[in-house]
Image 1: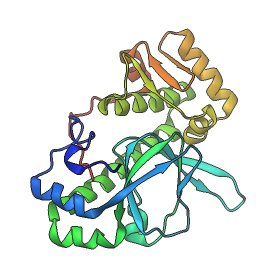
Image 2 (image 1 turned 30 degrees about the vertical axis):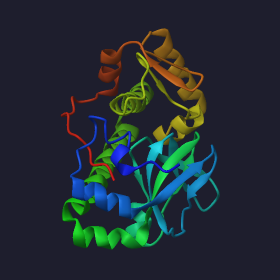
Image 3 (image 1 turned 90 degrees about the vertical axis):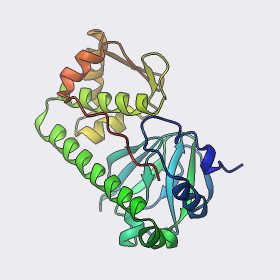
Length: 242
């Protein structure tokens, strides 16, 4: 059964801004249904258009770009609350693909109604702009980490990012969050070899900072992880939810 926007579990989380009654009413009209995706399912394809946009209601995925010679570069990850497909909505086609890493449930929206959102709900349209700007900030931070940090700091940056994002959407149990990605995905995203990534994770485990095992990330020392990641204290700003 499709989740009623009034009872959306994500809306109850402190990580997201509240919506007015009129905004919720519009989202109910904007939403066309829900999509169930199994692990490995391609949700959006590079170079193709889509009649739908998505919000990740549950589960996790990844974004990747396929090069001309067939190699794949992971460029980002999809977590609960993330909006997917804005590129296709604005630029007609995706410049990267999105794939489910776990079983996912996604709210689907009619792409043709995107312009109605801009015309009739400017505050919601501004939220889309904020989402795009936030993604730009993240890509800048990721590029700085990949280009300037050593291997230990790179891996720490990525794990710290996962941990803070997933705890914000109440995915944690104690000091453990789900992390269903392969070490190869993490290595790819941070510009490291698989061997180097494996050794770095082993060192972080030996130093009792984090343990990555059986699709779960346990953070034993959050303060030390943040220090290694060179993470700045971020203001507690709520995110828009589409």
